[in-house]
Length: 398
Image 1: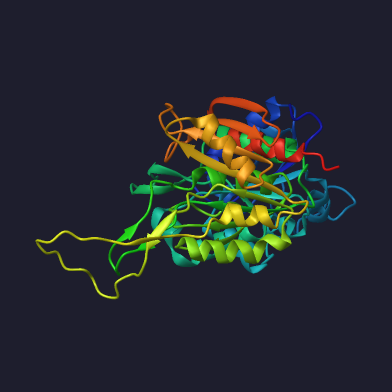
Image 2: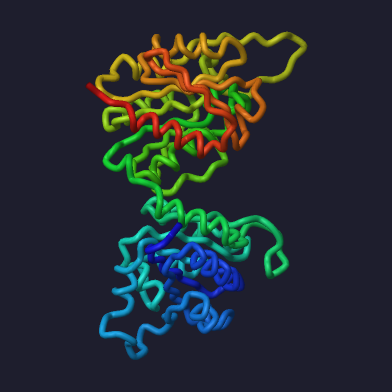
């Protein structure tokens, strides 16, 4: 699968270094050419000979040792890489890359490469949660570095929490994605909305829905990996910003409307996956409402229909909507395509097993402006995202 692909693997100094041995083995079985760079600290956990034996290539550690070939080693490795992976990536190497520090063979080569860099963090939970480390990770994501998120569990130090290096099979999958995904959306700007909105009743209470934002975030992530410039307008969620995506946080439907209308002129494509509240309290109370024996009546007013307004100024842009229904799925969704001037709509039935809010899977039906209907069976949301992006890519303008 990876025949002819050249992978530079950086191994930094953590107990998870031993897992990098399995990663090298897995990549070699896929016929990849693997070159390992170790930090001096990493060589205290696993010997360079181990990686040399597994990769069948010399291991680089000291940038001041006599050259093996008549070339500058860190530059040649930087140019050689089709993808550059650091696993484990300690807080130290993450900090160096975020600050542009190049003081050993691994950091200097990583900073010199133009290849996609993928980091697999591994460290103590408290270190991972440290605000400085999180700031560095956030910065690198914004710069386009890929991350394979660490797992939760018992750590080598005995603590339990997030910080375990991802399984080598998961890192392998990320490498394959980085090498095989076509950049078929390069040059396109995509606006994606995701998550719920919250409409305040008082400083304590609000009206909202069950959306978690997973579908919209999956679309944003896959679009970025396929080369698009992605703007993500997100309601309140607990999700991390996908790598390479520019995120704008909003709370209410009116805030989302304002940000979307601001960004839309800059974009070629809009995918409205957010679950926007149709109604909001006419006026939010400035103080917390006290409970009484009387019934409480709230007067609701209609929020702006963001999708409808985009359809009115659509021009030659591509607009995709989402519809969540509990009955008459096709009929209700198809009417929205016509009314809101969409290219197609992604409809799902909340009653379907595996579809809807919070799940990692979805079951959807795509309905286009010509009335064509395509049913997509149960799939992971990132797989559904790629299907949606494929259909966007294939739209032809006359």
